[in-house]
Each structure stands twice: as structure tokens, then as C-alpha cells.
Length: 418
Image 1 (cartoon, helix red, strand yellow):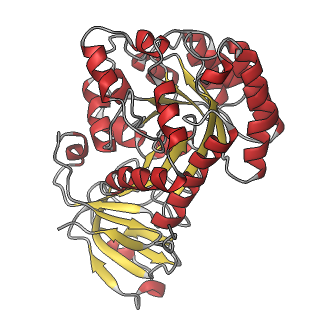
Image 2 (cartoon, one colour; image 1 turned 180 degrees about the vertical axis):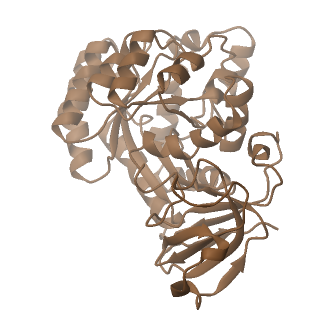
């Protein structure tokens, strides 16, 4: 299957006017009152200027102009935790859990991640691309401009490579920012049953160095949990990542507290994700390291969890909280980041400003993209979304009705509100 040309090859130079800047999501030094008319100038695919509409510099006066009609402007949304590339689906496990089986029981019976591994290994690269592209387009339609895509359903070099190659291809073809994360330490593949340490040695000595050398890895993740890998095995993965100069992330504290957050913080992790069982020691370590807490309400909801993440403690400690879909076939078959914002508010008690920062500002930080994404500011990529809604709270309010939006990626309109 031939790759289409990148969407943002020829950015447009233009001035958008009559827009409103979302509070807290634009450069903090802008002299624009909340809700006051603002303008944004794009040159070469980047934001060249933004500020009060009446103060538009003369240097941009000759550029074409486009009326935003009073729409609210936010940065392009960022989905900072997904497993978008995989084969098959696991609706049968959903039914099993509804009938009383626990997530751990399903996994130990040969279901869970390993069932997705079988389907992913059996699928061709083109088949994985076609299915992942459909899923990604659903996210793009509601304003996602940057996304993380993890591997972890191959669990063998050739199949992990296949997933990561698809992720890179999606970014090129759809003109969006894709950060790839190697999650070889996701589960123990069947051929390594009973040989967990041998598999981790293979991940660290062979798989990760090879994939990094091929330019397929932006970050490294692991699943530190009773049904996955121990703290010592996780640290071995982190040490291998550090040797290669790659940042780390961690699936931490989803089912139990194994001290993963403290370990991740020692390695200056970009993020700890799930964190339902995060301890006070973990919170303190994350605050010290500047590690983002990534909340995944879709998995919490799908698994019918009752153990809430420690939101108040994270808030009090000043740990930034991101929100992501965790799209995956087993525990979060979610393809709406706005729905996750709603769930973060209703289930986890985030405020609307916290939820919106969680899918923009803090999500970008969780991917190491804080200097280029997640904030409207001069010099950054012209990735932004115009929302013709009365209240910004509508972005986290509607259930099953996505607000119409105009999506601009790299300065060009990728989708227009009707």
C-alpha cells in the first residue's frame, strides 16, 4: 500500500480573526482578556503571532484573513497514551468480565494481552495499518493533533517492529505528530512461559537496541504489575533505555502498588499512567522528578474499578495530571478523547479547566512535547482547534455528541466545522 503525501507539506500563511483564546491554554503573558476578540497569524506552518485582534501587527496585514466567528481556540488535543496498532478485538472478554471474571482471571486463562498478541502476529503490516488508520481518524475528527502509539502486542522483534513501523507511517500519511513508545515489557509471550528473566534479557539486549537503531523508538514503557513484570525487571528495562538515551514511562499502580512510581521517578520518567493505587511516597517522588500522572478513565470504567486515583493528593502536590484514551482492544476500546475528559470530570472529579489542560498542556508534557505542543504560543506549530460553542465546558459536557470543530494542523485546515 503506497503512502499518501504528508498533509502539512505546504502550510498556508493566513490570519485567523474573531476567535477567543481558551484561558490557561495560551501563552500566559498575552494581554487578552478572557473571551475578548483575538487573532492568530500563521506563517510557514507555525504560529507567528497571537494576541488582541486590534493589536495585529502591520507585518501581517497583507495575509489572507479568515473569520473564526467567535469560536473558542484551544491547542490541538494530545492523546498521550494509546495502543492503537493491534490485530483483532476482545469483545468476548468484555462479556466474560460482565459474567463475573476478573481482569487478572481472564489474563491468567490465556486471554488479555496475549490474545491480542496472537492476532497481531497473524496480521500483515498493511492490515494493521488499515485498521489503525480508521481508529486514528476517529481521534483526529475531534481535534487530536498529536498522539502516542505504543507497541507491546508483538512481543517479538519482527512483530514489535511491525507495530512501530505502522505508527511511523500513520504520522507521515495523516500529517500529525506521532510519538512511538516501545512496550516490549507488556506481557510475557507464550514461548517464554516460566522464563520471565530470559525474556527481559532479550528485550534489553536485542529488541530495544535494534528497534532504537532503526529509529523506531521515541520512549520506552513497561507494565509493572503482579500479572506482568516485577520492579527489578522493570528497572532492567529502564536501565537499558537510559543507556540508549531514551526517556521512560510506566504503567504504574493500576491493580496494586508495587513501588513503580518511585522507580520511574528515579529515572526521571515522563509519566506514570493509570496510578489508581499510587501511594503518597509515589506522589512525592513524581513531584520531585516532574513526572506527569496520566489518568485513564476509560480503563477504570471498562473494568468497573472502584479504587479511585488519589486526585486530591496529586492536586495538592502540584503533580500535573494528563488525561488519555488508553485506546486498546481489551480494557479501553475508547476512541473519543473528549469522552475521556468527561469521564475524568464525572468519575475522577477533575474540574473542566483541569480536564482541558489534561488533554492539551499536560498531555504534551507526558510525551516530552511541552516545547512544541499543548499551548497556543508564537513559534509553536500551528496545531489548533476552533470550537463554535458557547461555553468551553461543552467540550467535557456532551455525551455521544462531538461538538463541531475546525481542526488546523501545521497551518492547514484538516477538518472544518459545518
